[in-house]
Amino acid sequence: MKSKILIILTTFFALNLSFGQTSCSQYYPMVEGATFEYTSYDKKGGEEGKINYKVTNVTGSGDNISATMVMDISDKKGNTYSSEYDIMCDGNVVKVDFKSLMNEQMLSQMGDIEMDITGTDIEWPNSLNVGQSLPDGNLNVKMKMSGAINMNMNVETINRKVEKQESVTTPAGTFDCYVVYSETKTKMMVGNQVSPSRVWLSEGVGMVKQESYNKSGKLMTSSMLTQFSK
Image (cartoon, rainbow, N blue to C red; front, side, top):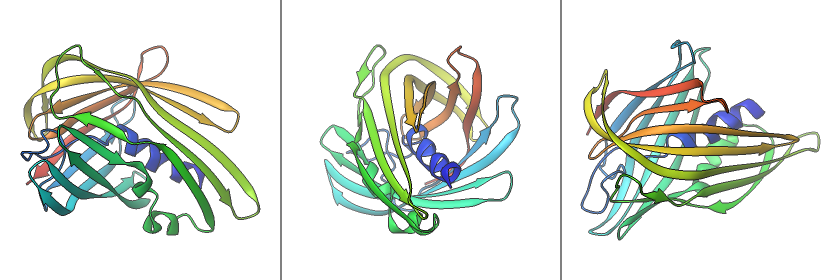
């Protein structure tokens, strides 16, 4: 149960980036029907699973657009998890609604569980520049499972900064990207963990590549855009 929750939450924070482009958003998926496949790998480069996204329910126009991101996760053991979350573009800022991630569809896959969620929506500006600092995001989850088992979890995304520009090649093509560094700080039960990461963002496409490291800076996991259509 806890591993399923962690898979969905950490995937959300790692891959809550962008996939399409409209006049409202340079780095978020606002194109109805756009689809994206990411393949995830372990520290040795072995395939661990795939994550497929589809953009639905695009509404609004101009500088005010909202959309729903449908997310399907499959791991190497054949386990599958599904969820969806909302994204909103308001002027020059895009927000990810963390509460919408914990929807009825996802909770039904977890069995008998009650969940209370608070936090700060993750924000991304529509314009990125090298050296730019980005706002932190956080997610607080209180869970009560069957058998009166309680679990609290806090996930923060901190120290977000645009490091550089770089060209990246994946099975989906070659892309000019901004590289964004951040740290994900997870507090769960009695354990604390800080995981540095980097994402490569390409205008009009979104996240092309993502890497997570241990506290010593060694690569632990990665994800790569392997297919997309819009």
